[in-house]
Length: 117
Length: 110
Image (cartoon, rainbow over the protein chains, first blue to last red):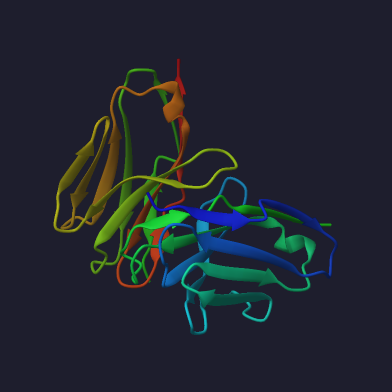
């Protein structure tokens, strides 16, 4: 089956620093990857859609200058949380579809737990 | 945009009983409806999905039904086992993105 990896699994950083999270599709090419944020005991909220070779599409209310997304290849997308603050602490999960549309099956990475002190 | 409502938010069943989780969606253009199972601190795992050209789909103890006219779909788990305990999310997708329900915490009591 389709496998998506995410690194790191857990990160603790000081307020004001930047953190990069990598999402990789291991056995398939992903034209589109999605970045979600999940607060404890809550649902997944889509932050942005990452398209290989073009700019990401951000959801309303998500600051594009704070959450930088780069989709440099068909197997790698990165999310950089810039100048992180405690309110950015959350579980960040990426997903990738095996085709080019959201109606393709999405497979999720294992998530990254970010804690900002 | 799409809005997905999911009920109940919590569900407790005795081992061996059936569990049913229901979702409604608002966008009639949505045509893909996956269900994910998420254990604490882990990734959501796709357990079953259905597309709008199908009314029902079954995979062993898990089944999903779709009523496009009423815009609702349901997850049915039969012969529940303790390892079925988790949070289950429904989602709906049209041409742009997956919209998730708020989740149902299922507890299967041995």
